Image 1 (cartoon, one colour):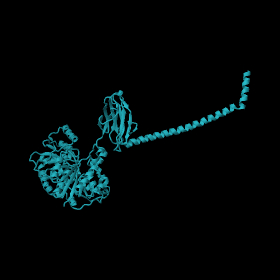
Image 2: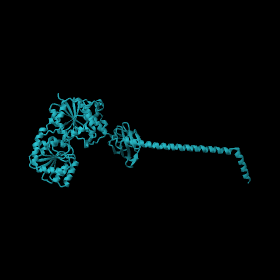
Image 3: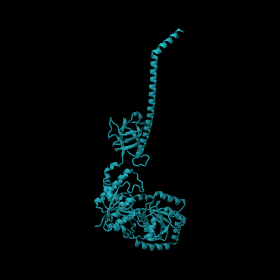
Image 4: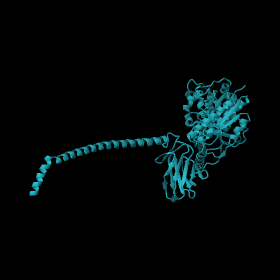
Length: 589
C-alpha cells in the first residue's frame, strides 16, 4: 500500500511558482496511487476556487486552516494582531495538523516552503518523518530563515532545494552532515497552440510588482524608440508599483503599451510572433521562463540566480545584466531585427526542453525518498510534544476574542444588565457617554479580564472637568489603573450640576512588544526607578533632618544646662546678700 502523505502548502493559491509546482507533484503522486492530503491557510484569493477544484479532481483531501499568520513570525507580511494572538494561532495550527496526522494515519509530512514550520513540529510531535522543500534564496525578505537552518536540519528526514544556484548556496550554509538533494519545480503545461500573428510584440507574463521589475522593461522600450512594436503586460499588479509604471509612461509620452490584467490561461494571449521578456530582481527557478521555452517563444531574461539556473538547465533564453537598461535595449533590438533566427532557435530549444523537462525527472530525488523508509528526524521535540499544539485553542477563544467596555447606568440605586451601553475596546480611545435622565452614578467595566491602563479619565464635556472615582477594584497610581484580577470596575459619582454629556478616555499599556517604549514592564520599571530615587532623596533628607534634630537637641541641652547654672547662681546666698547691699546703697542716693 502506498504511503499516506500530508503536504503543508504556503498559500493555497495558484499565483506563485512554488504552489503551482507542488500542486503538480501532489496530482502526480495521487495519480500514482499515493493517498495525498493537503493543509493550506484559508484565504479568499481569486485563484482559490481553481486551486481547490484541481486538487479535488485528483482525490486530494484538503484541509483549509484559519490562521492569523501562517508563515514564520519574522517572514514578510505584517498582520494587525497582537503577538499573543499570533502565538495562539500557531499553536492552533499545530494542533490541527497533529489531529489530521492521527485521524488520517499520515506516514509522511512534506512542508513546501522554508516559510512554514507547523508541519515539522506536528510531525515531530507525532513521530512521523518530515521533508522540507525549499524554494527561496535566504536573501532580502527571506534572509531571516538563515537562522532557522539548524532547526530545519534537525527536524527533517530529508531536505530538498531547487536545482541550480539555490541548491549550491544552501549546500554551503547547512552543516556538512546534512545531505541536501535537489529538485526542479515542474509546471504542467497543457499543449498550447499559440495564436497566429505576423505582428511582432514584446510580451511580459506575470504579476506586475517591484520584484518582477517591469519598469526596467518599460525604460528599455523607451530607449528602443520603436513604438510600432506593442509592449504587452499580462498579469495583475500591485497598485503602488503600477502607479510608478504609469507615471513613467505618461512622463515620457510612451504609446502602444498595454496592460491586459490577470488571465487564467495567459499563454492563450501570446502569439507565434511574440518575444517574452522577464526582468525579475530575484527568482529561484522561474516557471514562467520554462513555460515560454516549452511554448517555443524567444525569451530575454535578467541574469538573476534563478534565471541562470533555468537557463543552464534548458540551455535556452538570452541573458542580460540585471539593471543594465542599455544592454536590455540592445537585446530587444537584435531580437526584433533578427526575429526569424531567434524563432528558429527557440523552436529547436522547445523540442529539447520538452524531452528533458518531465515530472518524473524533475522530482526524481523526492520520489526516491518517498519510496524509501525515511526515519523520524528528532526525538527532542517528541519529548516535549505536550507543550506544542496539544490544546485546542478554539475552545479558548475568550482569550483572543474582541473585548468590550461596558458602562452601567444606575437606576433606583442599582446597576443592571437592562441599563447599560457597550463599546468595543481598542488600544486607546475616547468614548462619548450620554447619561439617562436622573442618573448620577455609573459603573465602567473595562472588559471582563485582567487589564492594564496607562491612563483612564472621565470628563464632563459641558464643564471640561475631570471626575475622580468613588470606587475601583484596581490599583491606582497617578493616572494608571492596574487590574490584576478579572472583572475590572470603576464607579463614578456624576452630580446633575455637571450635565449629562461625558467622555471616557483610556490608553492601554503595551503588553506584548518588549522593545516598545510603552511596554508595561518598561513603564512600571521606570516608575519603580523614579520612586526608588525619590525614596533615596527622602532618606537623604531624613538623615539630614535627624542630624539637624540631634544638633538642636544638643543645643537645647546646653541652653538648659546654662539656665540651670544661672538659676543656681542667682539663688545662692553669695549672690543674694551682695545684691541686697547694692540695692540698699542705690536707694540712699
